[in-house]
Amino acid sequence: MVLRDLGKVSVITPSYNSANYILEAIESVQSQTYKNWEMIIVDDCSSDDSVNLIEGKQSEDERIKFIKLTENGGPAFARNQAILAATGKYLAFLDSDDCWLSQKLEKQISFMHKNDYSFSYTAYRIMQEEGELTETIFHMPRQITYKDLLKNTAIGTLTVVLDQEKLGKVQMPLYRDCSEDYGLWMSILSRGVTAFGLNEELALYRKCNESLSSNKWKSARKTWNTYRKVGRSNLPSTMWYFLNYSFRAMRKHTRTP
Image (cartoon, rainbow, N blue to C red; front, side, top):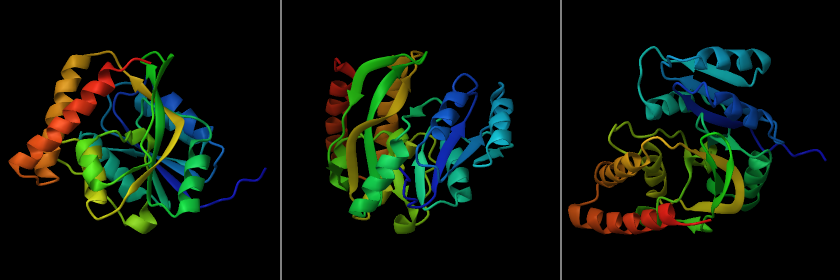
């Protein structure tokens, strides 16, 4: 079967001290049945062996583009540099410790093309830090509007594909105390765009064990700041959205397979 080429996909990958996982992420992109992609990896001043591993893969595959930053700017800045360098019709996001299933791009790009969508996301499975798959799959709602998003941070960054020919060039907010990916989805959907879900497991999110309780508090704090700084919500609105977010987050993190 010859797959139809529906346009180049630019895969946006920030890397920082990712030597333990970056090869798995790259190989999951190389294994895609949809072949028209470029993977733009931006290293944010790693101190481990990440750069050597990435350069080794780059020498084997010309579709892998590599940018080395000279100063540490954080993941949002790294992603923004990759977005600026992207030449594809579509933007897809994959962090250096996550992976895709092999038909991810084929199915998702076809889904977007068939329905004329500019923003899509998929279901994803949780894997342990060592790579062992769990039984936990996060299924997605059929669609998310701006108002839905304010109450629900369900969209997994590793599953998102954007059509930048329809949306224009985007950039993540650079507030260090905000959730940069959630802030980007917020800024896009606030224009009246609707995001659509392909409720099929097509990605694997690595759940690292280090400081999980601390990360939950940090995530909550960043979400609050994103409402205030990116969404520019007043205090009563922020409190209402945050209560909805907290309820859903509690259900999400206490769920059993």
